[in-house]
Image 1 (cartoon, each protein chain N blue to C red):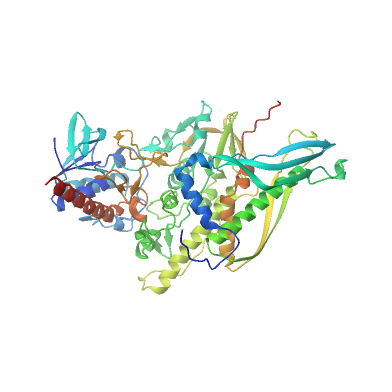
Image 2: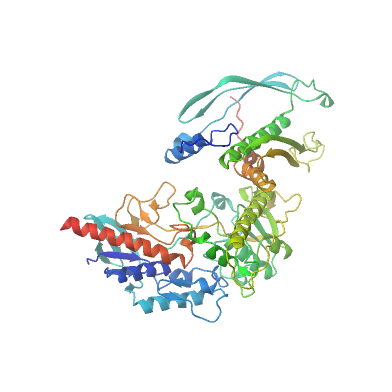
Length: 186
Length: 416
């Protein structure tokens, strides 16, 4: 990579990412990652999840610290509301993935970001999960993300950042395309 | 038989190389599996015309000289043009000589074709980039009672069953085939992934005129940021018609074609479509605006022909509020599926370790890596943005024959 100091800093080391891409194209087996979480039932609809290790670059890796998340359902579901609902965590996953993408793409395109705020909403007809209407799906009927971005760029360049971040987003792909899911009991 | 150079393929690119070799008095043969311009002759659908206007159709030593410079050649006109090129050059073509193997031998290469064995120092692969359809893995899961066609098999709508057609892919092939099938009266659904939108005519001039004059088509492979990406950009949504019409997704929607998201999987005879339709359309709209901005900036700084109009902007691609996410493939609404998902070269006869793990040839601007004396011409962005067009063979053939001549010279010196 070039060693010239970039004039723009969004705190993303794009050089390292591009170097990694170049290295992984030649060593595709190192690009095989496994992401993991462990979830334990606490009580009622409340569960506690921890995230610690993952596999990648050919070996086991660990996060700097163990992350812990509570999930539950709100009182209108007759639950105790000890944490966000799992579907809200999905929205967090999408918005944070897209936002990381916006920052990375902006850095790569040498666009200085001043502030980025995403508001995300998922529409859901809960008759689906309640089994009240077999025609209605359990999941979201649609998701809308609204960005407010202040950056040293034209509105068109900002729009292109957001479009490109969707194109490269793992969670956007997970949500917009089907994935085989296998659930085992051991 | 011993000969310095074997060129494989007598299409426009192979013949352009032959022209360059002849100019340097390099003895060679052009081996052609079928007829001159075989692919253009036998492997394209009936209505296809070149995506480049006639004035742009030129090869080293031959320029279009007809009376319709702004028109687009039909396939039979392309075949005629390339045949004429072969004749005026008196190119040493052996037709009906399919190559069975190319392998290394005695510091050079051995080419086995139709029972003959050619020993040579250099081989130029001019075998085209569109030999085989590139089907996504999901094609394996198609219900067996649907008719499945690739653009290499498709000829015209009359050959199709009555009933609906799903066209997978919205690049040049997909929009052209979808458009004419829709005009035949059949319901058409197009599954749209990443694509490149372009108007046929911009400010009164063919979009190729702008790309040509502004130098965009001459951009070199060693000048772009990301050549891997540039080489895999889908072909733009262009069509050559006498009316010079633009067939973009809005035009297709207006004809009643239904746009859906990229086909991501088929499970239990149901097609699952990506929820990314809005974003891929938005990306293509933004990219088109960037291209038009680049053209306008160039136009502001350069003298223009008479008849150039003012800058234009086009309506963003219309996407319905909630495009369907599934299609039932067994309810009879869709009878035929056309896989306009791209093409790939056939290297099954190439017994030289020159391919990467994706089966693509490893090359530096057409000079095959780690295989001295082996060359490739006629691939997307081989050396320049225009490399995949007929006129792109002009500069590429000149550069590669120069390199090849240097290589043969160095071989001769090392032997002496």
